[in-house]
Length: 300
Image 1 (spheres, rainbow, N blue to C red):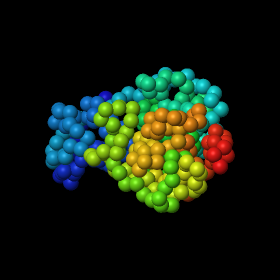
Image 2 (image 1 turned 90 degrees about the vertical axis):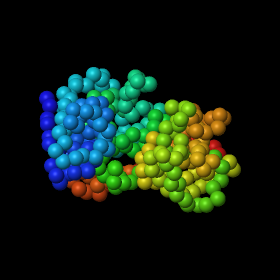
Image 3 (image 1 turned 60 degrees about the vertical axis):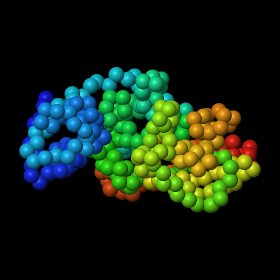
């Protein structure tokens, strides 16, 4: 099914993706709308344009609706640690080593497979392989994630995430000793030009801000708390490596002498947000996994 819209005078010079999100498709996430534009399902005057195309009065926007596909994933009982659940969302304490959603590079059991076993109600905005997934953490990072049960909750949570209203705090173990007890890293992040598995601090990257404070110092390491102001891929890992304090156990950004058996020592221990439907402020905290705490015991 196709929709055709003529751009009114009041929206002259609006970005295409913003106009569609705010005026035409308010129940869809902006990232989903951008995906539709990039994939050619949205055209302007018959042509494929960029997401930031500046609209002109009387432009004709044509939108080809994508029919939802049946979810071709088998539910798996992963005994997920559900910290909170209601009719609108779940808060999950993700285990280290668990990938959040299927991808070309990973077809094994993921958090999504476990969610499908736990509940039939998950938002559909992010497509058939990422139902309910509002935000992600890396495979070897443990800790708290919000999962949306329906599209309205997903849209509102995604908006709060983009506006930095969801507060996410982490503990991380880094190499070396810090000169300051608190600090802020404000450095743009983009894909590494030579190693596509890595991200890097590079000019022209996306705005990224990480706040940190020292919690405890050891002979060769420092335990820190981090608060994310933005949520870029591998943000804490990249920022700490950038200031020469890579995370202990990080196979991608740290030294070759890996410590531990579960990857980087990084744990999302706290998340705070306003419930998208109930409008209540909610805060959740969880302890670090045993592998993390036992390593700290050994180095104390």
